[in-house]
Image 1: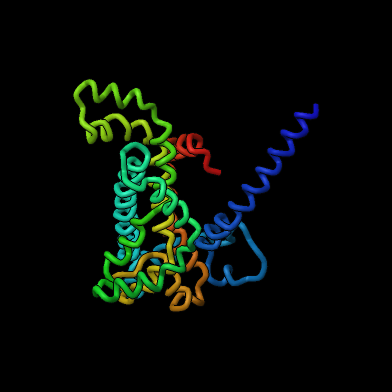
Image 2: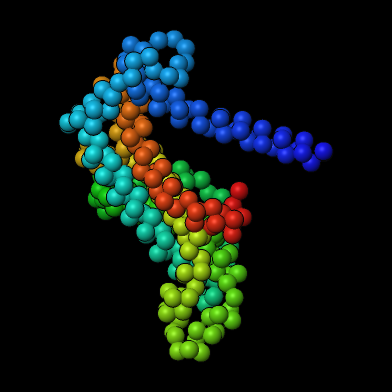
Length: 276
């Protein structure tokens, strides 16, 4: 009886928390289907009185004023390329620290862990000055390269590589495989859920980043969708919350699709690594 009461309390608490997170998303979708007149009325109306798609059609056909497809393409390209770069760098670094005889390995690992305590925003000024020195501002390079140094990914993968049975690697070596073949064909497939987890986290982080793209891009052609929404919020969409919400809803579609595609591996990876 006592356990039943505790379970009811946990389920109720989970439902309340879920509603707390889902409510803003639902309100965004509801507003995106309202007319401007209804969107400006006082109070929160969850169901539109007049259901309209005009906000979506206007946002998607905004021309040079609202180049949604350019912003979305930039965000997707930067997110995908940045994620691939992080996966390549982090898997190699984590495997080297976990399995290979690297000089000063403990010191290097301590530096990786220590860098996790440094706020990302502190690195903005030196990074900005460096990219400015090489003339790379307002390019894809400045939007992708800063994300490659991901210490969290190295730490996440290091634990998985460390827990991988050495006997399986030794058996592969006895069968004639070299270190590179063991890494690619034996070790990496076994940590696929963790790699998926890191990929989803990284893509969402890069895709949703706002401040760094805002500081380093100036031309409309290089803006990402997050900076584009901010510009429209202060621009022609300032008097049209319905269009602004429609643009925001469009921006969330890629993240939701990628999460759905990798949901099973993501949950498995979180379970393996103990991320909370």
